[in-house]
Structure formats: C-alpha cells, structure tokens
Image (cartoon, rainbow, N blue to C red):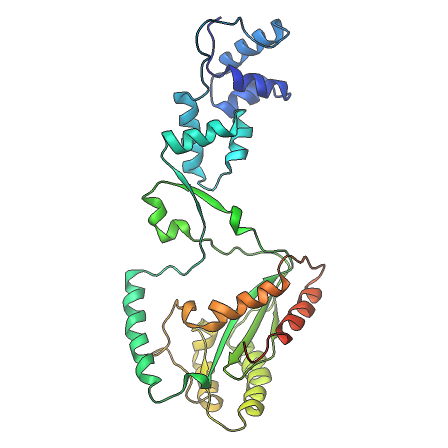
Length: 317
C-alpha cells in the first residue's frame, strides 16, 4: 500500500481509541484512506508500514496546512496545543505551519475603548470645551462616578488570551481588544471619588433594571445627595457621569438640575471616554486587584470583600 502522509496522525488517533469515522472527520480526509491505514496498523503489530528508504514523509502537508488555516479563520483564538491534540500531530509542527507557512504571529489581547473617526472628532471637540470649562472651575471639585459589574468568579488570565493574526490584522484595534462577557452571579457596583474622598459603594442587584427611577432613587437621592451634603458642607462640587439612557432622561435631568447644579452635561462630557475618568482608568483596577484571584461562594461574600477593599483605599491615593 502506498504510504499516506496522514499515517502518523491516523496512527496516533487510532491508538487513542478513536474510530475510523471520527478520525476521518477530525483530519478532514476520506474514510477510505483512514480504513486502509487502520487495516495496515492492525495487520502489523508495531502499527507501522514497511519501512521505505529515504527521508520520512513530513506531516506538514498541503492538506494539513489547509485544515489548520481553515480552523484559524473560524476561530483565531484557538490554542495551538488544542489544535495539535485534535489533529494528532506535534505542537511544534502546528507552530511551524502557523509561523512559517501561514505567516501568522500570536498577539496578546489588550483592553481598550475602540473609537471610530466620528467619535474621535466629537471627543476632540468636547475635550476642548472641557479645557475651557476648567479654566474657571477646579478639577478637584469633580465627583467622578461610574458603574461596574463584579463577578464571584475569578478574572480570566489575559496573559494566555491570545489570537493568531497576520501582521496586517495585528494592527487593527478591533482584532486586538478583549471584550467583556456577561458572567453569572454578579452584582453591579456604583461608586464615586473626589480629590478629597470617596462615596459609599452602592450595590444594584443583577435582576434590577437600572432605569431612570432606580438611578434617581437608589444612586442619586438615597446615597449621593446625603454624601455630598456632608462631604462638601455647602461648598461647590461638579458631578460627572456617563450618559447612559437612565442618566440622561428628562426626569433624571430635572433631579440633577435641582440637586446637583453645575453637573457636566452632554455638551461637555465626551462619549466613549473611559480614559478620561479616573474611576475607569485607575480606581476600578485598584479595587479589582485587591480581590483578584479569589473565588466567592455567594454574591454577599463578594459584596463584603468589596466593602473591605474599598475602605482600604485612602484619600492619599
């Protein structure tokens, strides 16, 4: 029988107990080829064909390269180890094909906010307005606020979240950003900071929809207003918030104008700008770091840990 270039892969998968149909499906080759090789393996106890002269045939074949390319196109985050295991070939072979034949390189995902050209132009315009605004107001008077979902599950290891991309694709922010996913058993946390202190943490249960009524009552009136009244003692302050629908409704704007005059409105605060808000670019990361690596049995355990971590962040920070 003529030697099949897939014989090493077929032999390995056959030794693992896979049937001919499953081997053919995994390697994407004909069932007859698999049956012929399996028949030869069964016939020869050492599971090898008659040794031929010359250099052994490599598993780096056109068909193998095509299979690997197709799988990467379908999922560019696929692990090389997993792909090698599924194909029954060495990881070094997969790595060689990916690097030398397909010209792909592994890139670590980065976290960030993607901005379109339109968003960049609008952001620049509003940032110029902000600079003018703070020529007469003090940045230290701003209450920076934000919400974040915390989960009882540990954070993913982004060191090992990689993608196989061409050099051109690696330059695309869309392809290199890690996107957040919705995890079960989580809680929404609202908080705010100023140059001289921090608000209490406000927990909003997952099954509660944060509409205008909830935001106004639970966040603004029940928690933020009592805090600013005590903390600023009648002095000036400036409320910053993002412009989620519940934050910008007519009824919410009425509450803001009545109790939080001087807030940064839509004409000043640019959308899609987490890097301008210290809650986003610093404080949440600090809080996450204090509970990192811990698995919590319940959401209440997570809340308790967050309260302890929040209390440990001092005014100097």
